[in-house]
Length: 428
Image 1 (cartoon, helix red, strand yellow):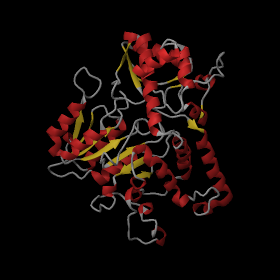
Image 2: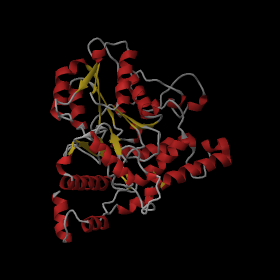
Image 3: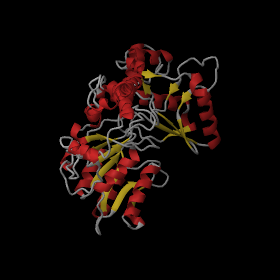
């Protein structure tokens, strides 16, 4: 806010003015990235041909599904052409030097910097919850002493279901699911409360598995600090990064995270149900004690086509990829990652901080006490979660925003989530 206020003084205009927003956009070094995306019109998102129907919508829902990168369409069309013109030969002969048999390599090389990992530590396969199950199959090894999994009490339901079913699969009692719960009357978890819970229960915790960014509140957790505390207590540490990847700075390798999983269709913009990503720290690259579930594609590529039944795992994350790479969904992700490759990540996250801070300011100054912003100011990425004091107000505001072509996300009974994604969002 100090930066924004100083900028308003330099521009000679009010902080809340359209002129200020226009000046900020004019000085935005990343503004041209918006041209990399297909921006729906008001008519397209509302189904109404109103007077402003041809105008671009205001898209604030990248925390749920990112907009389509133009490159994603091009890459998918190229692979469809490759398939049509060459059939099976595309596995080894490719017009664009992207043979399908090694397609994953170009993706993990571009994705690794976004999560702060080495390429050997990153893989792509399946979708998010499937990958969580596969990682827990390998890393959740309960015994009579350590058998609990720590998750948030308000984790995304799919995470809750996955952990619940893993516990039932191992025929363990229900107390094996340990819940980190906000204090009464509070919407978010206090960081110290998480650390205290790990210190108190650590000798019984097998796996700590929290979210990098809490999907409902938008709260960012201190992955580095929590991981270190959990390791000190003897726990394995995994993270659901669905709302974190492409949204906040990550250094999974340096933070010594054991494993992580994420979808790629939110801030990564790979398309609905896009292929998911995962991370396995290189310290586990040759760990044969992990009871991973395996398939042919996890076999070392050097001897994979010898077609023996003697499994030799590929090194690193590749040794967890059970099936061959799905090319069409991977092509869409590749196109999205090519956009990221044009951006210095610190500049992207700086813009995100400014956008979210400015949106926070406008809401507080213009709406005031009619809403409560529950996303902690110092623990957030590109998301604000707004609670309305009454359900009728919530429904009326969300309906009005939808009619105006403002695309955001509702969570009943009274929450609207908004996300000014820095790759394609402008102030004016």
